[in-house]
Length: 207
Image (tube, helix red, strand yellow):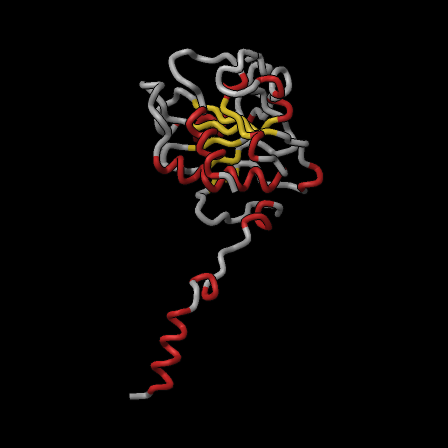
């Protein structure tokens, strides 16, 4: 038996995994331009990233859910890309976890209802009332809660969101406490809490 080879093999096995295969720096990717590959995300780039210095000054993230069926995120994203400032959002997430980046980050889609919630039902609205609005917030739309609006996001959407929210926060320097559910800041459909589970997940995951 070659004891030197055995010792070398045992030493290699004892090394931490990260010493063998470093994962890409997500923060560095998030500040790049073009259509980068983001590990763990299936991205469809309808609008590439530009020069970050020329991006709109995004300060918040608002999580939306649409009552479209499975497959509707693609249609919504395509329509948004053709008319960027229509009512809708910059980023759409399909039930299978596919993320569609629909609008150039220097443009402002129309979303939200003016941050009209002021009853402190979900969070303290003192810092959100009339302040967390579409013109300063990245909108992310999760499709698929049809016909049951109370249906939660799919496992694939949750997995994509875990990475996507980190990318958005890293790219635009958005603090964790500025990730909001649509229902937290606006009076919405009373049948369910739009975006609440996803926004809470993002805050619970922390860094």
